[in-house]
Image (cartoon, rainbow, N blue to C red; front, top):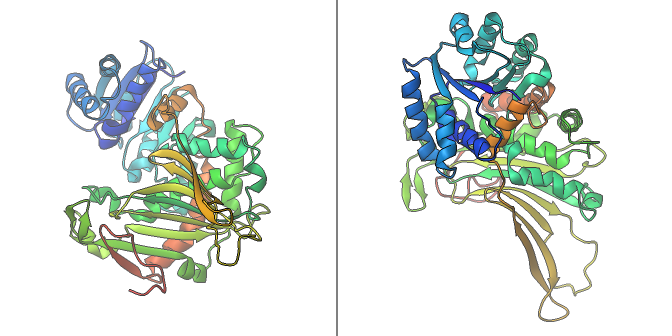
Length: 457
């Protein structure tokens, strides 16, 4: 296990909200010992005392769920080194020490190529590992070039392209529900399943993130990475094991099976929109174009939806719908599996049974199965709902990801070819949208989103 973590961009929001609390969770669970070192590297003119004070404040704010002793242990293990990632000498000084090191690039993705080049020139100890956050590049060409740079630096097994969605309890439960239950696996195919919706709708608006979000948009921020990763776990064939090779091979198979979208497919099967002024939960929300830091000329979407089909034996004929939107009227974060209707209902012509629906709630993490049973009268139908709440995990998502990095388990990270396949799938959408072939619709903040095509206004 590596006991030295260097975080480049250590004073940013990612460290404050996720990495520091994740480390406190690891300490609480007994995964960090007295040898562990946290080195914060940033361009700011700070020293170790100021960084430790800042880290303590952030842990009190974002990691209060973890014991004070664990939070204190994380800050006590922290040091600070001023470093400009464009300067190989600064980078070499930041990572100087004994033994391998885990390198976390908590940086804007535009700096990844420069940082990787600086690390290569600085030289890193054998056995080290590197962590990159999404998005992995801005295009397929970017992803290919990043993979080339990384291959020159470290072996693939030492590269962690992390997606914290994969460490969420319910996401893990997708595999368990599918693969460990005889009642589900035989019907987990297009013969029985009509549609699968993979949705991350949120009431959260821009909330001051224009510097990142306005240059990215919903398609790149959510669908290209998080939701395609969920698609992989939902649709993959049962792997021989859950080790990194078998699991990631099956995920790549899913992405390779996605039918390429033609220009006419993009026109018919994708939607994009951005929110206008409205009210959410009793508060006024300005129009997206009036948010601080937004450039209206970019025509950035805050809502994206794409329908995909898989050319595979298991899934031919099932529609997979990926959707994400901001500033909506209700949070809806789930994988919803909609089964086909039964061939015949012996309850009279007037009776209709809604399709069975299996919901994997992502936030909050729960499981709901909507069935149909008989009502108070023998010949009537009534809805029947089975539900379960997931047991709280020992570690939060970032705690699990950090543990995998430190112990060297890349099973839940994204392999290089997987990242490229994800970009391949959505490149036709990005191209058509950039050319204005799909209209940028609008929806009021606090609404259900844009109306489907053909629905009257």
